[in-house]
Amino acid sequence: MSADLYPDQTALRVPQAGPSDAVSAVARASDRGARIGVVVIALSWHCTIGLPATERIRGELTAPSVVLGTWLLVTVTGVVTGVRLLRGRPLPAWPLAALLLVVDVTVFAAVGREHMFSSVNWVRGTLGWFFVLILWERRMTALLGMLTAHALIALAALLAYGMTTAADLARYTMHVYGVSSLPVAVAAGSAALATLARKRAQVAATAHALAAEREAAEQVRQERRDRLGRAGEAAREVLAELADGRADPADPAVQRRCVLAAARLRRLIAESDDVPDPLLHELRAAADLAERNGLAISLVTIGTPPPLPVRIRRRLADPLTAALAEARDWARLTVVAGPDEVAVSLVTPDRREDPIRSGDDNGDSDEGDSDSEGDGGVQHLDERDGKIRWTQTRWRR
Image 1: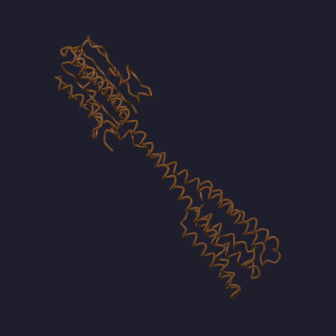
Image 2 (image 1 turned 45 degrees about the horizontal axis):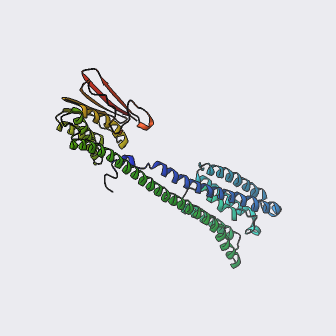
Image 3 (image 1 turned 180 degrees about the vertical axis):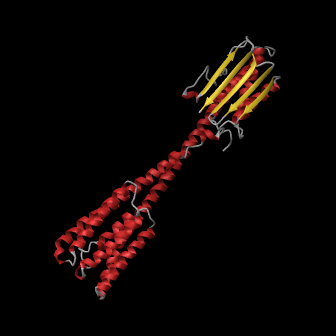
């Protein structure tokens, strides 16, 4: 796009913090829903399937107290892990993984050969969900590794009990598939949904940012068109008066009107230039025009102005442009800039017959001192003591 559509890129740049925060919020919401689902599944499965079966046939177990004790240990571990996971402060994964593997070996040894594939062997179907809990923020390979270790422990128990018939091996295969497929599917699906939600949120945020940028560009273009129309109307008016003989070219007031109209047009053109310091560029354009009209002017700059929106630059430059149009003999223009403040001062000889102007004739600038939000924090001072006239505009962040 052309520069006159975007006279100030700083004013149009859309902040990225907002969209980024929104994308992260969507991803967190999706991930939190998946965490809640895994915690509910793990604890529900653990409490509604493993415990009733263990209580029902506890007298037939080789070591019922070991089976119940490990069940209670895993319950407490699952509750604490689930609470910390939902709060976003998960416990260290690998110590918990080692604890669960020890419980796995212990329960397989305690249930005995008769209950190897029954529901009383609660680690067979429950432990995979607790692996998902403790390894939630880890890679999928970590979960697959833990499930592989779980399957190898079951295989070792199967061989230790001498259960090597085709039927036993088939049941073992189905056991491995059943206890592994669902946790892996839930973990992979949750990660995929969170990724998809993040991507969709990024697309939506990008679309909103582009829409906001287009709207800002249209506003800038319309404002620039309006200002150009007002400046052109003022120039046409004075030229028409000169052409009709209603204005005298020797009249100082008419000369000031011509200089002011030319300064406005010059500054509007300077606004669209792609330069490192737009404010200094616009002030130099006004100073050059005044110098061409015979004014001895010096321009002193101290520091580098920070990036400023067009409306702030206008409020800083407009009163100085009007004062330069009225100046005679000499002028000194000073720009003092820092990261959070810019002060532009103009000193000219004081001519009592000149009215004090704090804005231009077309209403481009506000009149008098201002420090309101609508003025962008720009203050305007205009003082005279009979010898010099001092005009200053100041912006503070």
